[in-house]
Length: 136
Image (spheres, rainbow, N blue to C red):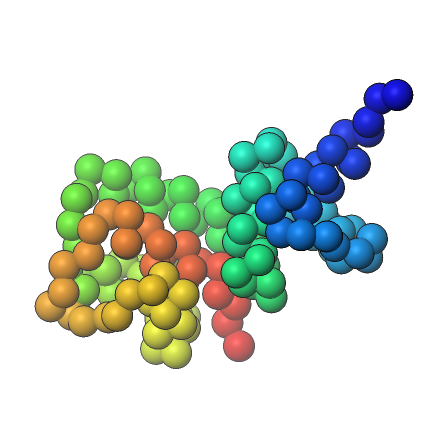
């Protein structure tokens, strides 16, 4: 008997995040589809890990586009000073508040300092969390 694609996706998600109710799965699947991500085993695993750690943080298509644009524009930059990173974040998301920036660094497991030097991968984490943070 063949397994449906939908059931396979759900099992893949649950293998990482644990069992979810039908209602929760419909919500997660809808968010994944609206985000515009191509659904593969690796994206499902990444999405499951992310949702396990940050269950109430949505991933949007606009946030992913902004994040990808940052990666393209700065892929050749190895390091960022805290001041440079702050300027980039304010350019990417002009209405970003100090609280949103603090949360983005916190979720990235980093502390902010204008003098500190951040690697490209650290900057990517902060940019990602800044882009997915909703304005209140």
